[in-house]
Amino acid sequence: MHNLIVSNSALALTGVFVLFALWIGYREQLGIGKDLIVATIRCVVQLFIVGYVLKYVFKVDNWLLTIALILIIIFNGAYNAKGRSDGLRNSFSISLTAISTSTIVILLVLVLDGAVKFIPSQIIPLTGMIVSNSIVAMGLCFRTMNSMFKDRRSQVMEMLALGASPLVASKNIIRDSIKTGLQPTIDTAKTVGLVALPGMMSGMIFAGADPVLAIKYQIMITFMLLGITSISSIIGCYMGYKSFFNQYDQLIK
Amino acid sequence: MHQLETKNLYYTVDNKQIINDINWWIDKQEIATITGPSGSGKSTFVKLLASLLTPTSGSVIFEGTNVKDIDPIVYRREVSYAVQQPTLFGDTVRENLEFPYQIRKKPFDENHAIKALQTVDLGKDDLDRQVTSLSGGEKQRIALLRNVMFVPKVLILDEVTTGLDSDSKASVHKMIDYFNTKYAVTIIMITHDDEEIKHAQHLYIIKDGKMEEADQNA
Image 1 (cartoon, one colour):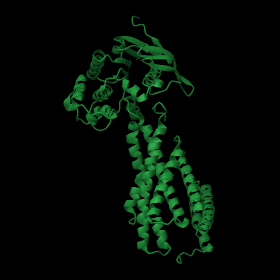
Image 2 (cartoon, helix red, strand yellow; image 1 turned 120 degrees about the vertical axis):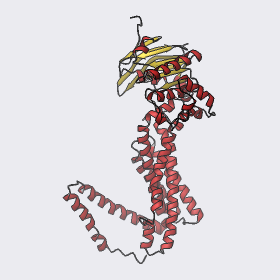
Image 3 (cartoon, rainbow over the protein chains, first blue to last red; image 1 turned 90 degrees about the vertical axis):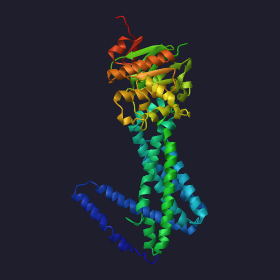
Image 4 (tube, rainbow over the protein chains, first blue to last red; image 1 turned 90 degrees about the horizontal axis):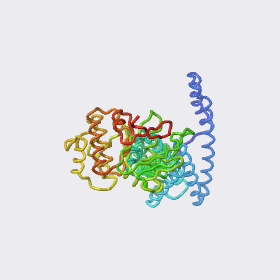
C-alpha cells in the first residue's frame, strides 16, 4: 500500500473539482447547486463514517460483528431496491429474499472455494459489491416488469381469459425482465479491460499489486457479478410477477 | 337453476359506479345480445361475468356456485371471453391454436385445429401463416378459435364483429351458430351492430350501469 499516500491537504485540493462543477451549474443555470452541495457533504460524511467503522471492525475481527454488518448491508440494500420498485406490492420482502439469497450463495461459494477468507476486510467489501449489483439488477427488473405489465396488459388479460395461469400469462414479461436485469452485467463483462479497467482491479493496481493478480481477482469478481445478477433477477421476477395479480388471478395493476 | 346469473351486482371504481345493481341470468344454449351507449358499463359487466374483475358487491353465480368459490383458471376455461381487438401470440397461426393445448398440458391436435379453421372459412394452408400477414378479420377469427379449441360452456364476445368486413362478420356468425347449435354453447355478445341487434334472441340494454331487457317488438 506504499503507493497510496493522500495527504489531507491534497484531498482538500481535489475539492476544486466540486467548485468547478458548481461554477458550471451556476453559469449554465442548471439549478443543481443545492443538490451538488448536499451530495458532496453526504459523500464526505458517509465515507468518513464508513472508513472509521470499517477500521474498527477490521481491527476487532469478530465473526459476529462481521455477520451483523452483512445483515445491515443486506437490509439497507433491500430498502434501496424497494425505492426503485415504482410502488410494486411486497417489493421489500421480494428484494430482501433476492438480495440475501444471492449474497449468501455467492459468499458461501467463495469462502468454501478458498477464493476469499471469512475475515471482515475481505467479506465486507465483497458483500457491498454483491448487494449494490443486486440492487441495480432488481431495480431494472422491477421497472421493466412495471412498464411491460402496462404495455402488454391486454395480452396478459387475454391469456387469463383463455384459462392460463398468471405464471403462463406473465412468462414473456418475466423472461424479458430477467434479460434486462442481466444485460448491463453481460455488456460490462464483454468490454471489461478493453474500454475501462474495473474498480477493484484499478484499486489493486493503484495500491501496488501485481496486475496479473489483479486480473485474477477481477475475473473472479466478473463471474461473481454474473451469478449475483442472475440469482437476483430470477428471484425478483418470479416473486415480483405475483404482485400484479390478486387472489382471484386477476390483473390489478 | 340458471347457467349463469348475477345477483345485486355492483362495480365501483374511484367512487364511480360502473355497474349498478344488475340482476340477470342466462340459461344453457341461449344467445344474449347486450347493447348500450359507449361507456355504459357493458365491457365491465362481461369482464365481471368472465371473472376478470371482482364485483364490489353482489355475486356472479355459475351453475349454482358463486364464481368466487371456483378456481378462476377452471372457470375461465368454461366461461371463455373474447375481446374486440385481440392480440395474437407468437409468430404463426399455429402458435395461437397451440396455446389452449399448452395451458392444459395436452399435445396439439393438428386435425382438430384444421377442422376449427374450416368453421371460420380458413384452412390447412393458414396454419403456418405469419400473424403479421393476416387481415384484421382473419386475426379476429384466429383469436376466436383460441376460445373454442376446447369447447367452453359459455362464450362471451365483447364487440368481436366491430370493424370487420361483411365476409369476416359472416364467418364469425357462422362459427357462433355452429358452436351454439352443435355443442350447446351459451353465447353472450356485446354489439353495436344493427343487424345483430335486430336478430337478437334476447336483447338487453345497459345504460349508466343498469341493465334492462329490451322490448324487441317495439
